[in-house]
Image 1 (cartoon, rainbow, N blue to C red):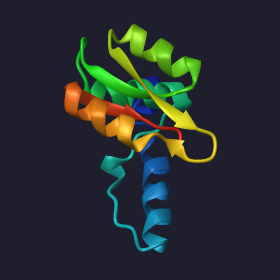
Image 2: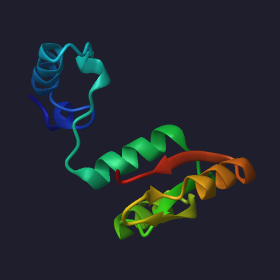
Image 3: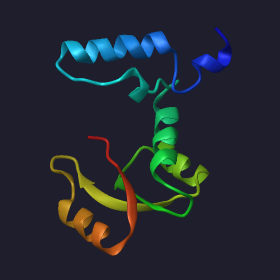
Image 4: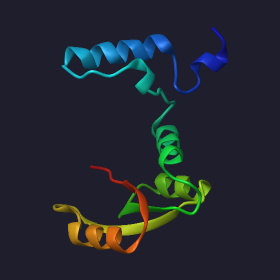
Amino acid sequence: MSVIENLPPGNVELRQAIARRYALQGITISPDEIVITAGALEALNLSLQAVTEPGDWVIVENPCFYGALQALERLRLKALSVATDIKEGIDLQALELALQEYPVKSVLADD
């Protein structure tokens, strides 16, 4: 097996095992739909690259993980901050307003 075979989407046997595990829970998913990453930031970067282009708007919770802001900057994406409350979560009215006023391509939420 070459090193290239273990780059995203990842090791075939592992993706097949994950698909079987989901099947035991009644969830049908193909191994081809599963991507193995080396961590959360790689997963975040790949996900953002799949749904955005440089210059697109992405909503982030405030406060948010600083690494997410760095990922947005690296990908030349624009962050649009929406307030969150420790008990209530994201401010849904602010989120709705942001979605109405900006051509948002993605929303990053921790919950």
